Amino acid sequence: MRLFLLLSCVLFFTTCSSSPQKETPPNIIYIFADDLGYGDIGMFGATDIKTPHIDRMGEEGIKFTEFYSASAVCTPSRAGLLTGRYAVRMGLNGVFFPESFEGMPREEVTIAEMLQGNGYVTGLVGKWHLGHQQKFLPLAQGFEEYFGIPYSNDMESVVYMRGNDVVSHSVDQTLLTKTYTEEAIQYIENHKEQPFFLYLAHSMPHVPLYASDEFLASSERGLYGDVIQELDWSVGQILEKLEAENLLENTLVIFSSDNGPWLAMEDHGGSSGGLREGKMYSFEGGMRVPTVAMWKGKIPAGAVYDEMATQLDWLPTFASLTGAELPKDRELDGKDISEVLFNTGVREEDGFLFFEFGQLTGYRKGDWKVKRPFSGFEGARWKNASPAHDSLLINLKTDPFESNNLFEESKERARALFSEMEAKYEALGELPPPIVLRTPADESHYEYLEGKKGN
Figure 1 (cartoon, rainbow, N blue to C red):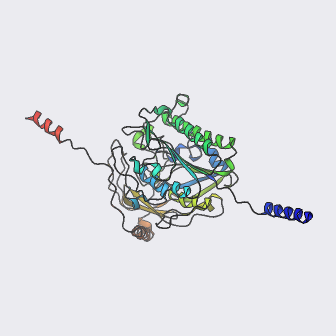
Figure 2 (figure 1 turned 90 degrees about the horizontal axis):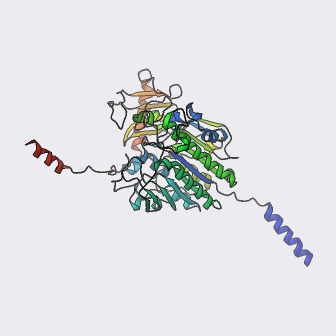
């Protein structure tokens, strides 16, 4: 009898040990720069800024050469990233301000909410910019922890928030990147024993530019380059922490930007790497952003993806990688690119709509891009000038700088793409009215006083 029991136990444990073990879901860290241009990173062409840690991510992982932000300005870009949906579906066509009373609609499902429902802890460090009223803050959109500035660092009332509370009205922006980095590393330390999603949304290099003392005069491109090199240091600190905790092989780390460079800021505004225009425009310079992803042992080292992918793709991709359930009650505009990451397939062929402040301006399908006629912009201190143009047809493989308009010689192709663009736009269905971002102050009392002086 004892021999039978012994043999039974041996058989039981042998069977258990030989059964397949369920893989631990990967941690995900998404590092988001603000207004970083395509030409500001070493492996994307910068020679006067050193970015060895970001370059390492591309060298040991995958580099995306034709990766699009969800918008050319930051609020709709961030909304698109977190929901996998065009921001026009939410009425988010511009950026929020400290005087805004609205935010991203609460019914939107974010990456954080999706992963939280699959056993993840979720945290955000940095810039939010999707509404600063309590009902719109990160804790209401699936993030269990939040530390950062709720909008852009050039706006009034820049504060640090922790959770739903303001913890400091005095923000030393020279230490901003370091502070975010320290918070991110502490988050990893606190949650290293469980699957986590960390969204690290840097405020830099959005103006005003600030770097800590040890990075000042460190680059060959003035203060802007110094700021980027400190961001690169921050990436290095994150990778170093993951290595120290033996987490690098089970963590997907992504680095990207919310839109192109703010060229109106001149030498404080970054480089598009020769791409046409920058922030606020749906030309390539405003929409194509430097993007790399690293997952040691999973993503083949040195992979390069030379086809289109977008910020909208991350939510369905994270669902695929983690086994999380996609929201079934709404349309998603992103595509699962997990096979792209693992070099086992390509992104599903699907056109991409370009918007400027809610207005449909263009469309890309395959190698081709069309843009509607543009009346031009004479320039302002907040937006650089851009000349008028007629309908455009561009082959982005042969002309990524959008300098050669092929419309006249390929009208049939252009018209087919414009027709497809309109059909895809119509398929979005009835869109909500634009969310009110802010309303102007009534200063008629000052006008009254000025009028009295004139009498």
